[in-house]
Every structure is written in structure tokens, then in C-alpha cells.
Image 1 (cartoon, one colour):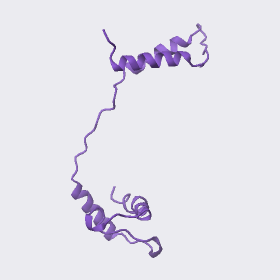
Image 2: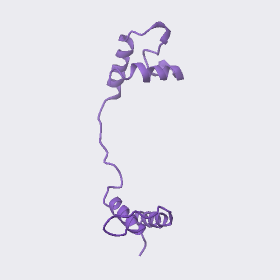
Image 3: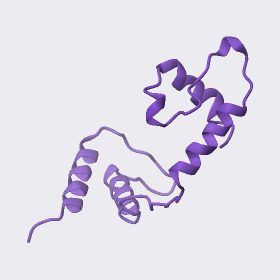
Image 4: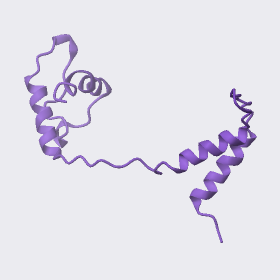
Amino acid sequence: MTLSDDEECLNKLRSSLLCKNIGLLKFKSSRTLKIDYVEALLNWRCAKPLAAPREEHLFVVADVLGHIHDVIQDTSVPSWLGSVPSNFGEVSAGTIKADEWQLLVMVYLPLPF
């Protein structure tokens, strides 16, 4: 009988935690050993799902890009701020530079979202 990958990982975690010098935490009623904490931690982790549930967000990329294009065209910014291609995301816009990415992230993208 072979161990599954999950059980093997938990066994490695258990042995690695037991080797750590975390010291003893004392409660008023009784003395608690490190093994008690390791077991409690592993039991808690085993009760949790292995991965977070995936939430599916359905959206159409063309609609989102169209909305971003509208925001870029309709937003008034100071002349010293620079500009980004109004057709951002299209092949004809080319590759945008680092300062243009910064403007998109800091100025234009927060507005529609």
C-alpha cells in the first residue's frame, strides 16, 4: 500500500514541524507538548480544501477593451502627464512602454472599474 502524494506531504510537514524548536506553550490547566500543536495544526489543515474554490467571471474581452478605450478618450489629464494609445490592446497600438503601463494602471484603469 503506497501513500498518496497528499499523505506523503503531510508526513513530511509533520516531521519537519516536530524538528523545529518552537518551544512549549503552557496553559493553566495542563502542559501542552509540541506534538499536540503539530497534530492540531495538521488536523485543522486536513479539514480544509486543498485549493480555493474557483469563481468563474464571465466577461467579453472586446467589451472590456471597448470600455477602456472610451475611458482613455473621454478622460482629461494634464499635459505633463503624458498619454497612452487610445486603441490600447489592439495590434495596431503596438507594444506600450513602462511609463504608459504606469499611466494605465494609476490613472485610466481605476476609473471604469
